Image 1 (cartoon, chains in turn yellow, orange):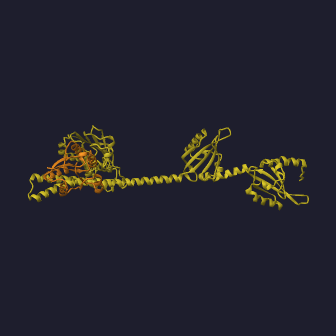
Image 2 (cartoon, rainbow over the protein chains, first blue to last red):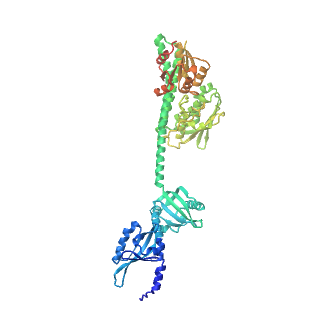
Image 3 (cartoon, helix red, strand yellow):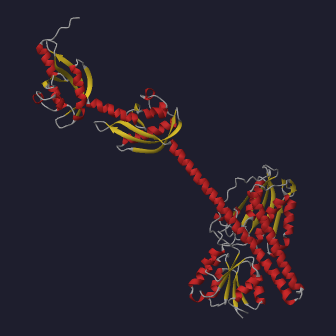
Length: 518
Length: 120
């Protein structure tokens, strides 16, 4: 192919006006020619440049490197390389140089020529790209118009388990479940409507490779030259592990707190139980010690009256103790899951009437006029002794807390349930205490002492629920209380009460009222 | 006859102790809670000794002691605490009392303790 050499004048124009910088240097690296463009690049006039040393143009740190390149020229090597020049004020100027050796007619080496381009912009871009690529958090950019992805870094690809080739050009709805995509887009719109960074402390994201993750994302609007949003920049940190660790930590703290609470409750229980047992013991002991003392001192037998009084009081204390001990043992059985039942078919009406007959005298003595409404045959499969215990508990509570007022006891059948109601006309129970009374002590804190352990209703509830039934109270202060027991006629639950996971309730409020102990 | 203010909420303990101490020659004034006891003292009653239960409704033994100690003519009445509650040492300090009897009581111990301050 013929390669016509342009005329000298055309060559001159090309070299003078080209957008590339052109430098010609001699064997000593003195500049013999510099075009306008190289002048622009390095911030000096061609006149200033011609006659000075090329090495003066090189950034001081790069001079040694450049000398190696120049050395290659002397060996006849042409090459392209990058080198940093120094502007007149010392500014580093990144350039790409296309360098070639020059020869005279006799093929002697006379110097070199370089075509030089200012590549600072490219270098910055490359630098920034590498930064973005290496940021360990996901970095993405969407265009502001239709929120399609235009940029994804490596961390983003890793998180989503997709290459950026599959991500770019798509939007959230193409990549994520609808509800998540809707949330992302909603936030995007929020960001683009303003000028500030929007911080999303936690948002869920479903990743193809990593499953369900949680991200802490910041979204920033990137405005164009017209001040309108052009892009949306997002930086997201995968906080899933951190979140899980936090949740685990909280779980452990909660468990510790629960364990401490159980510990505290059982300490409290022991304290109260020990106090309650010692109380009847005290009067019992005094009575007996007094009797012995008198006998010893006087050598005389006490009168029948006196003796009877001592024995009656003693027997009473023994009864109190017995009931307390039984209650404590029941609570202990409940807590260790050993409350067992022996089921049999029982005529509930007969059982109820039996208990009421046993309590006829004390009820009369307390002026509790009795109104009994019992349907004829209500038979249920229950533990006779235990259900009797529940009824006795309710009746003795009436004697304790609602004397001098009428009492209505009723029994009926509702579907497959037996319904027992014990309605008194005593002082009633405040709403906030109505749940409390079924708790273990169901009463005010230990600084306020009330006789008895307050276990009756707790145990009753355990018994009733173990039968698959329910017990509740309906009451208003001033209007008395109605206790309602619902019992399945046929057993629905396992009668074994499994309380191995029983957790202690906190004992209670200062809501002290005359009638909190039941 | 020396007077003893007996503050105890359990009726059977109160009645038994009352009976015993009366037989031993003391004038026993029974009270069923701290508030009642404090009211009586403020109204002018001056016992030689106070037998004080700790766990009572309305005003317990701790609260009673607090009030007694800041009231001028009442602060110096000797107090013997009776209680089923453990942690004697901590309570003794807190209550600042002369003696602390553990329940269930032993009547000889009760008597000998009282005799440190008054005889019938």
